[in-house]
Image 1 (cartoon, rainbow over the protein chains, first blue to last red):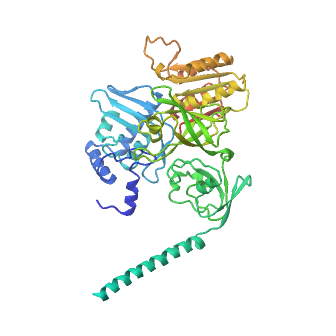
Image 2: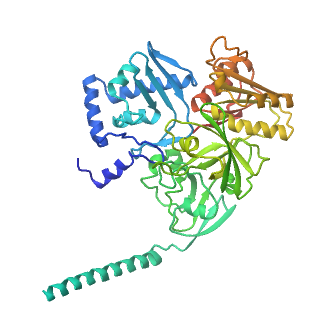
Image 3: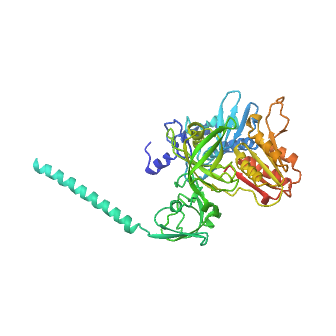
Length: 150
Length: 370
């Protein structure tokens, strides 16, 4: 997919930087807009929209954060724990501002699937439908988000 | 054939001359058109005035005058740490900084100093503490594990050789490039007491994938040279006689440890209780030192609390979330002051507990990990 200079500049922000050691694309060869398009299609097939998924993840994040580092059960077999971190991280989408660092690790004890949820990750899903590239630590498969946090 | 060759040479010569003329024009333009000449930066209504050559960013020109505004991105306009209030001469808000400024900030003249170009006289307001911020070169003397994911760094200052700070303040540690990762600056509270002017200590908790903390844990070696700037921050003990409540968790220990050691050295007799939250005994550290402090300071009590300690471990101290433990111990907080350091979630929960116990919000001071 051919990109305009502005799009190329935007794509650079998704790579490794002073703020995100691994960047937001992992080893996914697709451009951000291709990832968004594929995940939008996945959401449609699941019958949910990105705002709903973001709200589910935000609720899970809030519940884990309130436990101050203790493990909480989101639903039978699914647990979450919050890890604090100092500072804020800017969104790679210009205009979205900065987000508090820290992550919530959501684990499905039956399947072993783990989601790494951050405030920034939730914001990018809510605002842009961007679930990050495959291979990124913070990539969330839409169906996993719905299944674990829903 | 010869005519063709001459034509090529002439063309190359023409291009070279054109390039030279253009380069000359650029140099002249920079000197005479983009040269804004000496510009005055008035700081805090005349408290300090510096004269700089215009054309650069406010952030970099202030740094050239040894006035360091906190910044984590090196002036790229993406961290929003370098906010200052510009009361005159700022120009229009640019598209890069606009998303980082709330309506209230825009109305109040807040700007990202890295995005403000100094093209004339400028008037700004910054916290007075920034006047004492310096860049330091130091050497790591000790890197000591405190828990499985927290290390203590002890750094000897080389140039300048001494630092003045108030217990509770923080500094910015500069990582070096490694494995393709860029050098970054990150904020850490100083855990050493202000009396030890030739050293600074930090407590750094490993953040998975974190650029600076990974550098600290995996690449920084004892004896290595490090750079930092500081001191920054307004988290410090207020000079009153109110009884004190300290609440922290994890690496939030750092500023409290500095404040407590300073209290001991200054022979403070203020009544103080320190609630430190952890999950298990393995997450506790400095316990012996704090018990020793408790013996040396009769008005001080250290109360560690574990939220996830296994049954039968032999732990006889407090159990439960730190908020519950504080609730049990502090029925009436109306006359107290509280100093909190930890994650926003912990701070918010503790603020609610303290307000419920009657503490006015104005008496709650915190260093959110933000």
